[in-house]
Image (cartoon, rainbow, N blue to C red; front, side):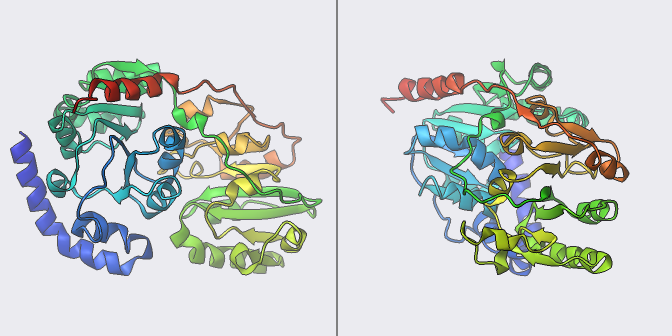
Length: 394
């Protein structure tokens, strides 16, 4: 089965490679990642390390930070440029994860492989077991929406789960679904994204205004919300797009909104920001947060957070934990199917059934969201250490 899968992957690669190469020159966000993943640009061999963490992108890497810090000699692989950049803050042993046909020649031995969420790569788990590593699937889940597709390809997932030793599922429901697909040693644990600790945030002074943030917006979502919102005289609106390659597009959308309503706007990147002159940043009515790594600083001084990725039906929502730490009023759309377990970790989070209702919420006296008390990651840490101890002689 592995042999036929590998031959199939080679055929797919031969067909897709020319298009991927062209795409790597056309879009900025793929400029490095596609070349590294599909053509091994500066990525000929994985770095060495006994513990190997693999996660897809920025949010997943952030979730792994407590574990990465506990195992500082670990190696990390990721899929996206944002995930790669975040991982480099905590380790020098970071690679882009290559297309599967390269994995047998690229991957170095490890003692424990920790895969985050739904990164189901057959050659990755197969090679880990080839090197006699313990394979841990962390934060595993199967959403209501994706369940049908998982069942359709259950034969494939049963093969993958043959090579996974232990699974930490986000909930009892996820545990049962994973077991139906052939997963063994499944523990109904929790969503570890709830354990992300805030980094040291900047102490910006809060202006005398109600700060409203459209946080982590996606395509079509900005227009949807801007077409409905009515800003009061004492309101300031911040838009923080989810993906940096959309900053220019969102700037045009926000400019059109401001011209229509006779508002002034400002971009974060055009402003030399410091704690001393921060108040000047809020001279504008509308602000574009066109940079990464600053959103939590703004959560700290905001009043109302519209948690986006949930007002359109093809994303599934985003993590509410960061915003909830700073006691904001949090309003989400109804499409949060990928984040159900995390939403359960927050009390007082409002669900807006339609974008047309956002002004109804803004006219209310909204209560602040509260984060429930979080437990530690001791069971996961113990599982990793057991894998290392059992393979000391290797």
